[in-house]
Amino acid sequence: MEIKLKAVAVSKKLKEYKEIKSVMCRAFPQNEQIPMWLLHILAIRKSVEFSAYYDEDLFCGISYTVSNEEFVFILYLAVNDKIRSKGYGSAILQCIKQRFSNKAIALNIEPLDPKSDNYAQRIKRFEFYLKNGFVDTHCQISDNSDNYQILATTKQFSIKEYKLAIKQLSFGLYSPQIKEHTN
Image (tube, rainbow, N blue to C red):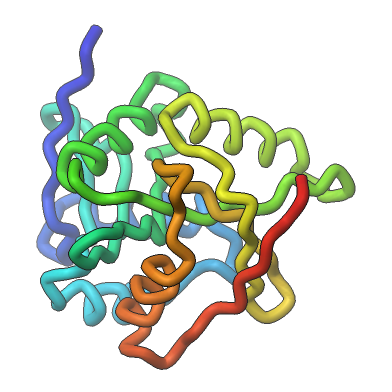
């Protein structure tokens, strides 16, 4: 069965708005959650898209992206946890890839640290993205005390474009520290 999703801009007017907030809270640890009011302010710019995805009337998930001429950064991607493992995450990624077909796409995941409490979940997430056409860039972003592995849809990953997208999202106030990693 082919999934055909419809993307809609997230707004407080959506009847699923409370569910969208709830899914984001369940999908991301507290330290990774940007307040909804700030996400809405940032999404006023045309380079930022905060989207909810629907399979007919069924709320499936969200994405939050920032783009420039050559590059797209996925800040958030979350599937409604009530309907996970039904192909919706892959379908959302397909929508993003179609929307930005001429651009490289990157995102961050928790690093594959065997000592982490959720190592099995990290492996599963990494394999999901590999299955959906992402590659390990062998780069890692350090954000305060947290590190994230950077995945992209191209092996010719541009740290410069990645940094530009992050700076663009933060109005130039944040410049990430990026280093190569070996795992």
